[in-house]
Length: 137
Image (cartoon, rainbow, N blue to C red; front, side, top):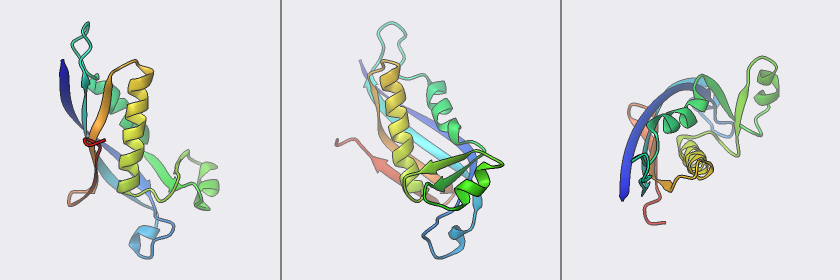
């Protein structure tokens, strides 16, 4: 049976945009919200497409972390005191949506699940989000 599921996860993390002119060039934090829609073949034995805790745990890797562009000079200074998650570009909601979708798809592959992200939204504030739709791919 083909099924679609939805999960919402929130996490707290800081970031800054290295190549941005404005307030977001300063290190600051957000209460991020991620909404994920996944689709695929339900496991015949368990009756589950993807365990909701799997989704929560993958996204939870960002909780209480500092997320910076891998080229940001702050990475080296901060890693002396706290781990830093680096991204291949500016850690925008747009990029995080793409990266999280990839992480979830990879986790499903590793677990042998026939499931994939079909849509993802990453909110960095209650009024701003980025959405990536993979339904036509």
